[in-house]
Length: 126
Image (tube, rainbow, N blue to C red; front, side, top):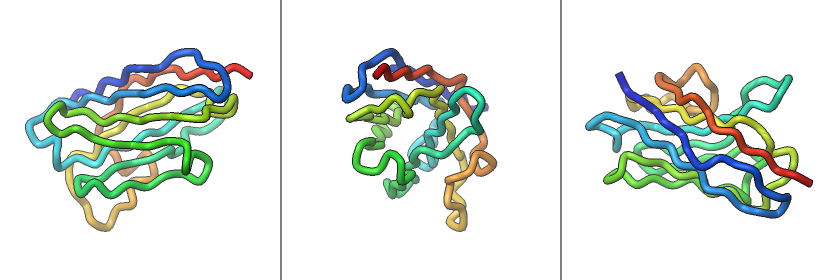
């Protein structure tokens, strides 16, 4: 069983920055695809970004140019650097890990991931 733990959420003013961390257990972390999703009150969970085992990254249009995902396999950790935050970025942010490398998957939908963290709250005030 892979454990996924997010950290780094908090309250920030619009235009500010936060860095989220996602640590996942497992000796084969370098083969995982790790994604970030978010869910605002009353809305469905939406894709934010993901990084594959190959370091290939993909972003939702709403965060492109503002958010950056990266990974440190030595620390079993993926980071989400969020800059120029907007009030509409307010949500619970979830990290998810796909433990097997499926080349046909886009890893942009929740069902493509195997393990999920509990989420971390990000609140952006105007």
